[in-house]
Amino acid sequence: MLEHGGRLREAARRYAIPLADWLDLSTGIAPWSWPLPPIPASAWMRLPEEQDGLEAAASRYYGGDHPLPLPGSQAAIQALPRLRRAGRVGVLAPCYAEHADAWRRAGHLLREISETEVEHHLPELDVLVVVNPNNPSGRRLDNGVLLDWHAQLQHRGGWLVVDEAFMDCTAEHSLVPSCASRPGLVVLRSFGKFFGLAGARLGFAFAEPVLLAALRDSLGPWTVNGPTRCVAQAVLGDFQGHSERRQALAEGSRRLAALLGIQGVAAHGGTGLFQWAMSAQAAALHEHLAQRGILVRLFERPSSLRFGLPPDEAGWARLEHALEQWQQAQ
Image (cartoon, rainbow, N blue to C red; front, side, top):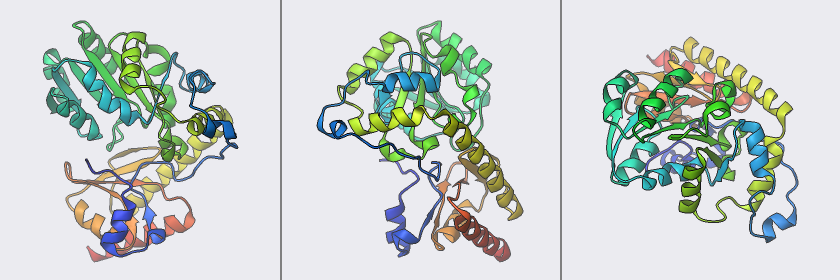
């Protein structure tokens, strides 16, 4: 299995620092949870049923018809490659590594390409996969560009798969409200990151009905458990809370970018949920922080670090102190 952020127990063992003493900035998940509604006993006792209100709540929140609930968007990432016969697939890289891995494992000819290479390779591709905003760079592509790529692919029966896992902070730029039912377009959304509820394991897919039906059949029944369905309905309907969360994340992200810059670790991109810094010394800084109980996400290609938001003022102070020590040692 590929490595991801959030492997806190492994870090605790490796550095002999108790689990409770870590500041985990490695995941790109909102550092604050959401007020949770009471869960009725029936949600635990009965098999989950569709059309219990979750689909309607997701449709209102995301702005698209017929959302397909998933046990995390990861489920669709792994299932989609099995819905096409082996072909030529491009993944806009660097990005979330599970995309390339899933298409490669399913027997497709996989090519990781940069944004500037898309136009050159697009005529030979059957599928193009894009993470927008990108993880880890935070770069967001214009919808016009994406729809142009989609039109070229769809004309010959291809797909454009757009992973919008980090789009909630800039929801106005999502493809879902106006485009998600177009043939050959698949848009994935993640529930856990923005709401700070990654443990719920919930995501949604938007696509044309025929493709959604095939994806639903491949995943089987009861993909999302009853308690998660119950909680998500309430959370997705809290529109005042959504606005407040977007403002808090935007402020936190700007503060993080400023802190990194002051301490000589310039941010090269980000979203409301993280900042990304390229550096030839990324591995050394990752080690420096880990020795002080601060976990960030290390990427080898390109050499870089992704920093999530601290959850409180104590976390901010701890990160600032560790970065000051790093800068003084240089």
